[in-house]
Image (cartoon, rainbow, N blue to C red):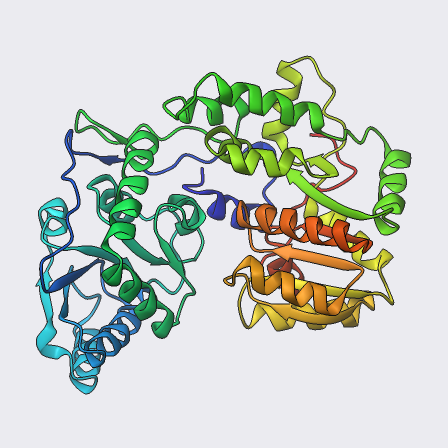
Length: 445
């Protein structure tokens, strides 16, 4: 059992097959009536809750706090929880002293009443460097109606709906963290909107109003994914969206069709968008009509994973071969040998490592490599400048599908032929940060 899709991806990378990996999210007890968020009149209190240890990133938050104070902002930090060791506690306190913010940090120590501590802060911050499967304190902060700024690692983007329910910043980047906090301080209306946007999904998906642990839900099956999202808006429209997407799937039935698909994608007739429809996409499409529409407009939409296969079988449809991106995309890269590509997604050091591997292993000329935390306008400018034959987007759902749609629109208007691949974690995989799962293209699921 994995607590998030990020954790499930890691387990599959270790070799566990789709059939045995299931996602059951953490649950938290929730208040029946969350407080409405109101911007503070004057000083702001940031909050962090953790067992403080190096991977939790508290030093990064201290650095961000120092930057905010240097800007003249009246802001302090309430740090809730104990330290893993006395030595580490002394190290962190010395760091705060060196940055000149020791007096602006209140260390509460361990508490059993986290909700009471969260009620004393104005903005929740999760600065973890890595290792967050599905952080319960983040879910609890959202369910209480707090605006959130967090680092984009592992299961965090899943909880924050890839930035729609909270601000996401790169791990280890104190300047980006300070900028995100400052932006919400300067725009309380946006902070309130994020607080409201994050509150209801967190309560619906991860919590129960009777004080019992959240129900979670087995997302690894199609029925489980739909049941988990049963409280989402527009219940009549959501099933129709999913059925339309299932109708759009290109089912690859045998090895000959698989080879023909590779040949077609390697020689696109025009701007062509390749997307993958897996269980994570199923869950997102249930609640996000815009994301579902981007998937529907993909030129090629492939079935990936056992969850969607189960759904197709329930509808008496043949699921065909499993079109796993971590197997299919490298074969596509080999077909683009000698041609130009733009790689967009992930972060350093994996970004440059992946770009180097594209050249060394696949003979693809990488015209430029951009991290996945920019905006679509910057990506569009780079692609229009470089005019590549291939664009690999590796920033995850739903952002990559939105960016792909904008790039495709430009390419069609410009009459430029290229293949745009929505590749999820493919850059991390190519860079060696995430091993491949055992069941891939050509296998039945």
